[in-house]
Image (cartoon, rainbow, N blue to C red; front, side, top):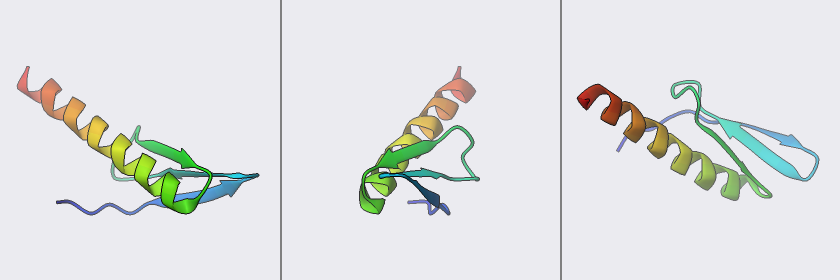
Length: 56
């Protein structure tokens, strides 16, 4: 399991997050925890897509 640094910012009632180490991965949520969970899923999808691109 890899660990990435998340930058989370609040805008109104929402939190938005991204990881500089994984360009294109962004998350959002009404709580910090929701944002972190959404970001983790986005990171997984971006990395899976990159892995598939490298294989083909």
